[in-house]
Length: 409
Image (cartoon, rainbow, N blue to C red):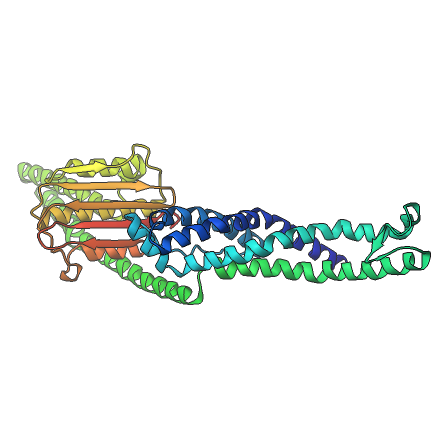
């Protein structure tokens, strides 16, 4: 019995907490119907993105509440809606999650208010019923009712017991069932559906494959740089030191020249090692963050770069900043090598959850990742962090690279 009462109390708390979303959902329904009606005749279409944005504030709150009660994450299922109001409207109307949100609002708005008030009222009602035999006689005869007016002791001793059993059944069985139904409704309608989950798994599988390929390519690049550059330089230094040792007693001038050559070789080797290290994780990112690193990077470019970036750009995880720096560096390198552009526009912004990068040039366009350019490396590096890459390069109209990196990666 103790476990059942505890379960009923928790269910009551869930249903009462659901009033915070049920009341706005119920009173927001007329506004939604109003917007939809005007969208049918075309007048309300510009207002649809803003109306849906307000609705998603409510569903996001309900998603967090249900996730906390269920003990598991309920992922946001929405497709990104960007661009002009018309593009946002089309995306919203084509997104199944938008229609599931509307269905949730109708069902939760019409049932959540009743469920919360019903569960909250049952507990004092139960106490009222249990205490009836103790005080019914002190009030005017027939004014106290347990479904049937109490007029004598026989009814006062039997009817409250029957009503107490009935109310206990509601509390111990119906209230938990209603709470589970409310959480199931939020999980089912406000989270991704099965098809979206399957698509998500396929995307993660693909991004994992690309991450492994990117990792393998990076290892091969590092091995190649160490083998062809650093190792060759060290062998050359060792040979010069050996020759200098042999010539030290008989030809001190030759030995000195060889030692100087060896010192120069060591300096070159250190430079190459710094280059390898920068390819793994540029130290400037640790010292100055992504903003400072990007400004230092664009300062040495042959093509002028206009940078649009907030001065207080929030720091992102190291892996995200490294990927972002790689995207910018590779994009600017492609502009210098393969483009005839004389102007580049670089825009970086973050809302704390997503880091967005756009690199646009006014070159000849026609860039194709399938041709073996660095664009494939950008796509793989971004996919490894579950990000998105968009490349638009129509012939004669320049190239635009847009990247989104989740800052939780």
